[in-house]
Length: 124
Image 1 (tube, rainbow, N blue to C red):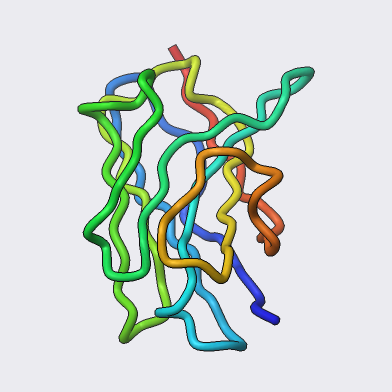
Image 2: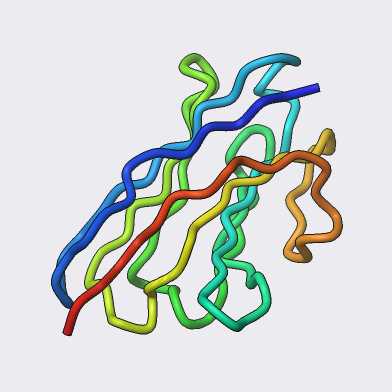
């Protein structure tokens, strides 16, 4: 079992930045692949970014490439999502997810553990 808690969401103007954090507890955090997903009202949950155990494999969704950066600090049991040049279409609840595998996934149904989400609102 692993518990995940996201933080760092908020309201920001377009062009601004936020850094989301996801703190994990329970089983050894460094043995989990981690992902970030988001869900806007009335829309399906969509992939944002994912990172492997050691951070050597990273995936990004096309809409966030060049603007978002995923990273992890296994000593702190935390994964981060640095979001720069935010756009109104980035507005959503952001979730982190974990799976007990080395390589990360891009499909939400492949993750076993989820946080409660943190709201990100980007005003135009």
